[in-house]
Image (cartoon, rainbow over all chains, first blue to last red; front, side, top):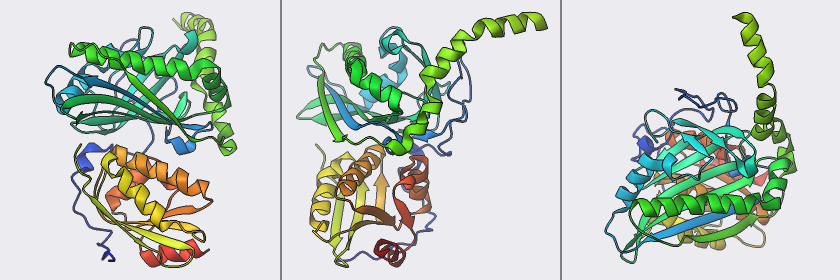
Length: 249
Length: 118
């Protein structure tokens, strides 16, 4: 049985059209909240796992919301509304003014291993039962994280799925020297907090799969965009900026 | 878990190129169907897998993730993954997700087949 191809220029939009970001993969910050630093975000291109340097991993973090009646849509609504609050202390997610909606860019202030890192994410996709964040150049990893909820055997399950490669050789080294475990703890904390929000005490199930063990040396130049190094340089040069500001005023 | 609303048909059009016709919705639920289709499309002489998206009705971000997973499997077999029949909306999705860096898009089946033979 062969399919008769439809006209590729068909103007009728499919029903998923409203859930996808509409603009190009270049990040545009529409509003900067107090305390947020747009250092490695504006103008950066979004990355899929294909543009990363390191090994490709799929990481699944799941929690079963047993003992309560809550729909997948209610879980995702609560997750979107409280997303920053579920993060581990020391890590900030500056949500867009319009909330987690397709195309919106959020600023992140992270502290992996105690080192400050200013970066961001873009909402690539968001519907009632899932949303996906895409990382920019310079982020620790190149890829996507999809947060979703679904029904399984009469119980609602909340899940975070990470599909990623470390962006550059420095980050790949960091991942191998313990960064990967730090990331696991990050999302396990987040899912535990989500479950607690719905008054459920649950164990997070973690499943890690190496999708591609090969390094992509063609992407080694990503290191020039390394947000951790750029944040460190920015931090070290802040006395110089302060003195310049003082001389002007 | 809901049933996958997807049907995939495999055509081995040449000894080196197979086409997977996708009809329906590509989401997380389509994983097994897609991987089974690839298993059927993959022969010892296959060098290119061509995805026909002209019957695609819906795709979410989990569906895009499946395409990435398929690409990894295809590349592991030293094969290429090509696509045709994408509407303007889905071409935009491939661009914004940067999948077009690795999966070449063509307008028609004959264009894709010609590229697969090169």
